[in-house]
Image (cartoon, rainbow, N blue to C red; front, side):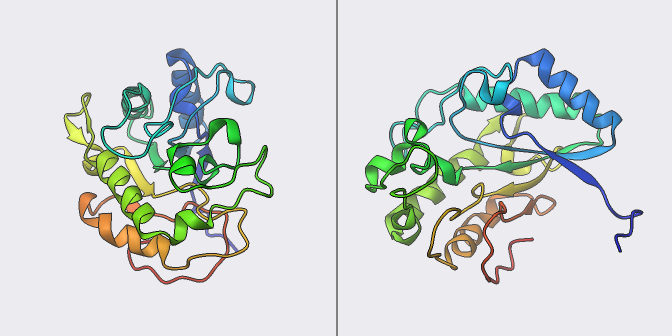
Length: 227
């Protein structure tokens, strides 16, 4: 039985940061009034009108190529603004979970494939089905280094509304995830991948901010840096 005195609720709205400003404010106010304490977003290319919303299209920082210099995307500026909106309209009662990459950018949806797909020869599909197989990404050491570089860049990014790195924003960020649904829709897993990467970036994040898994895949691992 769940102890409701300790339970709390969260909402998954992965492209909330791509919504128009007034929609963001309405969303945050509504969730706060309904005692929702966490909003989960992730960083990926977003479509215009994503999922029937009024979302405005945005490209991921590695949409077309991997690594530095990262493309001049307005994604980070828009996420920065959303973080500030959560701080203001969440009134200290809502924090964010931020997944810093999306497994489904790895060729699951060919039209939104990111730079890792071309660099590592990942086969694409129309909708997360064969022949898409991202196992090369999770088994290649250079791909792991590329991922760590991406994460360092994002965690070191300074939100101008706070004058602080993302990795230090414990007042409004509850948890980071290195990837949304890591290794989802795959037949084989690298059980060390997530643990290895989290160990390499833990020092970039305030101790009051957690690391969590990103969900979906059910395989056994033991990573002390993760909840």
